[in-house]
Length: 243
Image (cartoon, rainbow, N blue to C red; front, top):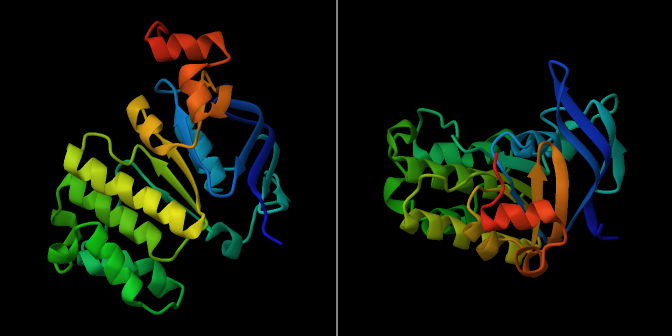
C-alpha cells in the first residue's frame, strides 16, 4: 500500500536556551507535493527542515513518517533516515572530483552507478566539470553538484534550504527545472525553504508561512497567494509585515 501522507507532525516544539524557536500544532505533507516554506529570517524554517530529516529531535510531540511514529525518545533507524536527504544553502563538497562527490551516496550504499547518473549530470550541466575538483567550483556549480548528489540515490523526500540563493538566473532555472522533473518522474516529496516568494509561486504546489516559530497558514499555492486566510499572511505578501 502506498502511503499518501509522508509526514504528519503533531504538537511539535523545539527550544534553544529556553527560547522556543518552533511550535507547530499540526502539519501534513503528502506524497508528490512540493511544499514551499516562506517567512522571515529566524522564523524556524531551517530548524523544521532539520527535524524533518531527523538531524535534530523535537522537544515535544510526534512525527509520523511513512506510517510510523517517532518521538525524541524513538528515532528512525538508518534505513528509514536514508529515504530523506537535505541540500543545504552552503553545501559541503569533498576535495575530490565532481563525479566522485556525486556518486558518493551510491558508494556508501553499495549501489551501482548506472546511466541515470550520467543523465542527471548532463541535465544539471555538469558534464564538462566531471573531473574538476569540487572545492574549486563557483557557487552555482557547487549547488548543482549538491543537488545531483542528492538525486542519484532516489530519495523519497528531498529537503532544500535556500537552494538558489545568490545564484544567477541561468543556474536558478537549471535547478528549478531539475527539481520539478524529479518530482514528476518519481512522485517524490519536496520541501523547499525560500525567501523568494516568486520561486514559491513557480515551484510549490502548497505553500506555508512560518512566523516566530508558528505555522501561520498552509494552503494550496493559488489560495495562499490570491486568497490568503490569515491577516499575517496578507501582511507578509503585501510587504506590510515588519520583522
